[in-house]
Length: 76
Image 1 (cartoon, one colour):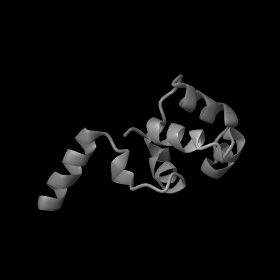
Image 2 (spheres, helix red, strand yellow):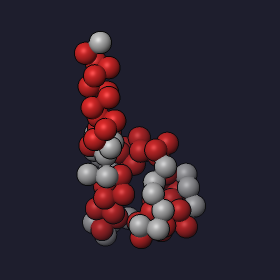
Image 3 (cartoon, rainbow, N blue to C red):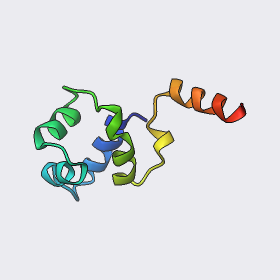
Image 4 (tube, helix red, strand yellow):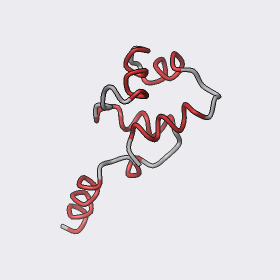
């Protein structure tokens, strides 16, 4: 799952508005709109906040290449 997919799924629950998401992530409503519409990719510095907001593990939204690198670092 990507960060965009996680945020979109969370938003589609219908229990939270884009302005509220923007407030919680400390970004503009336009940024949230652009992320949800697919116009812009979510910058990696927001992944941790999005994981917490969506109540998921950060590893679930990290790109697969990053997970592989993290696993390799654990082995060293």
